[in-house]
Length: 450
Image (tube, rainbow, N blue to C red; front, side, top):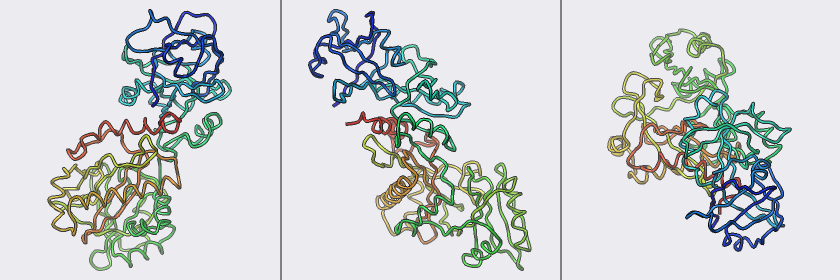
């Protein structure tokens, strides 16, 4: 079991690494032995020294001279794990980087405080922007949180062992630069914007999951729309890349050949009647604000809760063993005349207990079977998407039920909001796990999880 040790700066001259006597014995090191010490992408030759027992605190610490600290580009006070790599080589880590939006550094670093506080005793964590990657110097300018002073400090760091990508969409140019130093499969979430076309193709490739995904195709011409309208009666037209329900149009037949086209702008429902399908492109521009690529999708006749549609948002995350788990879920519903369950469209949260009590009489399963079904679909979907677009580390899935009680997986979000909007008593640890799991998975990718 790996153990972390706080790192202090010593007054030694040259490159010296001092350790408690029992740790030296455990690592089979001797006084004045030369070893190669690595941390992230940095490395330096040091000589081993035994820490003065009189200088030791109650907590065992290790020391590095100023020259060694500068060579590794790491700050004093960090708690590192020590991993032997053979041939008198040792690695301090893990070094985890969070790649974020340019505007988040340094003005919105508070968003990452919950990561930092959970990583105080588990290696070095820093937040950085793509523009601050220096490939030539093999350093990155970033910010780390100092828990004693309770503030963020800027400095240069070595390239990390692994990276959590919190950008949306991904900064793929940054991925290319990072992978030149840290290697492949060390960055997650590798794909945060999983567009609706890519999602449906991935789901259709799985024999089981394709049965729980609405029929979808790219909207290239009116013939595509007419085919779906004739087959299903109602259809959804959705932007290929969009968030928060923006630009979604529901089309349903009205009287005398008229079609009702419903969409929401700034939380307000609009219904436009058209007499010809040739008017559909104009409706799409009105709904989304400009011309953009769309899909046409089978409209699911949804089960309702208190007079409006509802949906589940389930969470899938990878743990410290690289395995998918579901730390929680919540439900949301439309209580007005909205046909969407997005918060921006006026949807509200539904306590799980209230929703279960309402819909279970209409389902042919128990509460535990229902939760098990949602978890099974969530984790299988995560595995399929991870295999195609990974490594991924976290996913949010939207699932609805039709009037017969069948679940349908509508879409996946590769960068779900990290603060659970509603803590259900069924998942009391969610608020902690939603930040802890990414750190554990990053440590796993870095090679610092047993």
